Length: 378
Image 1 (cartoon, rainbow, N blue to C red):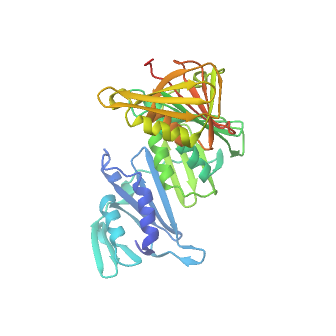
Image 2: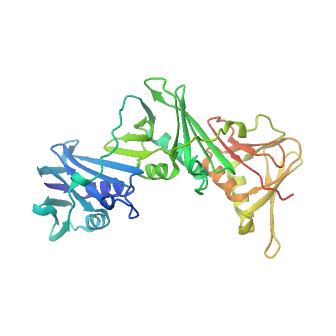
Image 3: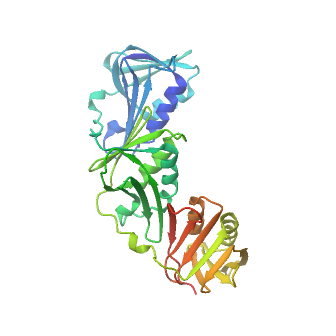
């Protein structure tokens, strides 16, 4: 194998596939990056057996030559060393040449590295996915949906299914739901699909986080293929595979209250800043709880009190308060996470009593909601 490649493109692809490579693996070859050179270009693959990422670098793009393949072939190189080397090479072009016995030479300018390679035949094959049932979604919308839900997944392994985001596809609509049983995030969007297949799967939160980091902010469509135990995201020159979590996701629809007793409309930014300040004195040990109370028909009071430190009182002007008076306590962190995920200048918070979950929605958008369980303090 022998090819000459633009260093910047190689560095970008290496960084993308490195997101799937881990040093903690029971399969030693997976600490490497697989490199395959064909007459079409060069493909890099990284995997930790849960996530696999394949990045393709074409020979040319818009009549600009990126790779010159002199001899086709394949090799696996230690990811840690290979990624550090390519980042620090001195010139804009890199030559990679595999000699006999898998010895790999990396040349750039006056610098030359020799790495011991591993036979690429030993690298596990990526899942074969039958691409009959594809649905499409704009990349920037997918990234927004991940950002607005993935923070609410559970970090505890006691219920592994809650460490993922529940994706449901039905009637040309994708719903993403995440919950750690103390809060819930939901986002829906229309999708393009060729058939009316319905899916109900759980994608690990970790996979979605890594996917989001790699994808560009464009409105180009990304293809998504769901199978029994894998999901594949296909962007331009990039394949991202993730395994799905096994088990049934809890039915979250009954968590969302159908009616409410108190509705508060408030400007998102003012409310977020007030919660942020109040949380400064909220005691860490009690999961930084703040107290919230409605006063009359337009004032909100947010307080927090830690006896050995002090207390804080914040007043926020509400746009509107309807219904019963209310006092409730909740985690400031959960509230701030929820507010940051919502888009829009105004939000509506719907309460059904001091000990019932409450729902936060942007004013003019019913495609997204956040739900938080209160904390008993009053």
